[in-house]
Structures are given as structure tokens and as C-alpha cells.
Length: 241
Image (cartoon, rainbow, N blue to C red; front, side, top):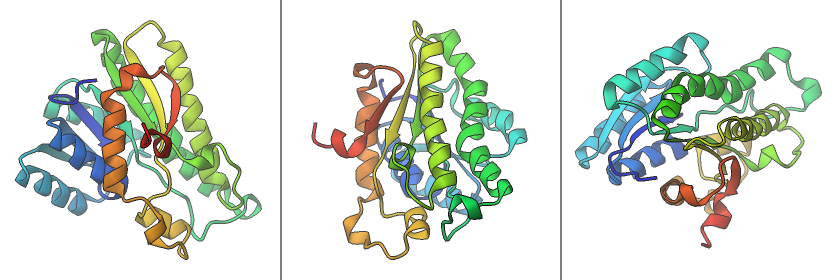
């Protein structure tokens, strides 16, 4: 897709990959709406992007809150117009330190699914209809290797990311024949607060920098027409292309 001039929504954008992707897309002349719960961090990010000459807008909201869904979609449309690119990046691990499924409270699993699966589903429902009417659009689901590998202690998160991957495939199957497309992208291990929360003993020097990953993801978005809708991509492999 053509990133220049595109109306973009990035969730989970106050830090980590989401913030880096917002910077990267804005540097490529996209008009970016950044959604996250932390309003102060969002404001700092938006100010930074604007000072660099980009267009960005902050929406403080919780994608796991059902009542916030239409407010996010409506505010985004008012700020940048009809959305061309929706990036579902917002995510939660659940309680840390990570714990086995037998030690996971039902309410904690429900919250992880609410943010990581139901939130993207609801926001897509609110935005994708307009994409279908315009017969264009791209939805990116930010996944994880925990979606395809069973790691002890990562049960709630892994289950949610596996469901998120399959959600993208089903959207793609149901909207086959339109020019609305869906991708799941595994960004790999990054030096982020979430990774540190999950694996506090990991050496940050062994992890990818979010800015580098965001650049690769933006390249994937730019050439997304070359990839079958519903595909799952690993950015570590894409870097070699």
C-alpha cells in the first residue's frame, strides 16, 4: 500500500514497537492516530513526531474496553479521515511474573483475551466495514512466536496470540475478493518493557531495537500487496529479503 498520505491507526502506541511504528509511518508521510491508555506518554510521542515534521494525533483509550471501541473509531475518522491502515499492536501479558495455567486466575485470562483478541475484533468491526465500502484497506495483527510455540508460563498470552493469528485468517477468508487485506506479523524478540517484564534476566543486547523492527514492518506494509491476505510473517525472516 502507499504509506504516503495514508490514514493510520496504531494501538498500543505509547512505547515500544507501537511508538516506533508511529514515528516510522509518520516519517513516511502517513497521517497517524496513536491509541494507548497512557495519555502523558502519548502526548510526548505526538509532540516529538510533530516537531520532526510528521502528522500524529493522540487518543487515550483502552482497547480492552468495549465501550471505547466506537469512540476510538469515530475520533480517528474525525482526525485523519477514513482509515486505510489499522495496526493492532496493543497487548498485555497478564500478571507478571508469568505463571503456569494451573496458577492463572480465570479473570486474568479473560482480561488478556479482552485486550489481545476481543479488542482487535471489535475495533476491526468498527473500521473494516468502511474499508469494504471503499474496497481498500489493510489490517495488521502484531503476533508473537508464542502463538505457534507452547512456552511454559506463557499460557494466557500464547492462547491470545494464537487466536489473534487465526482471527486474521478468518477475516481474510470472509473478505476474499475485496481489496481489504489482513496480515499477522511476528516482530521477534525486542528490547521493550513488556519483554523485560516477562523475562527480566534477558540481556537487552541480544534483542532487536523497536525502531529497527518498525522500519522492517513499514517495509512489509508498503509491499503488502505482494503477500497473500491472511498470511503470517516473521520479521526476522523479512529482514533478509
